[in-house]
Amino acid sequence: MENVTLPDDAVNSFKKFRRNYEASNRMYNELKEHVGKYVVIDNGNVIGFTDTYQEATEKFGKIDGVFIELVTDKNIFWIL
Image 1 (cartoon, rainbow, N blue to C red):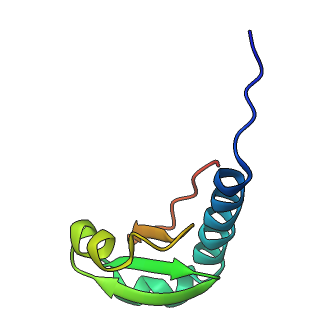
Image 2 (image 1 turned 90 degrees about the vertical axis):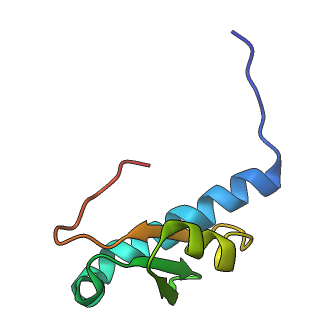
């Protein structure tokens, strides 16, 4: 199997996404006040809530490494 090297910008975007994901887990107690909404996190800060995923991606999806997730009544951890 051949090794593939990802471009630096792709690696950096994923690292930022992961940091935003980790921030969402740290602030879950604050986020759970918004169950049923989509939270948008950039640079470790909430930058918005929307009613639909489509609305979130339309407003914030072009931000590199942005994390968008539905706030649920239980904190779901993903393995990244």
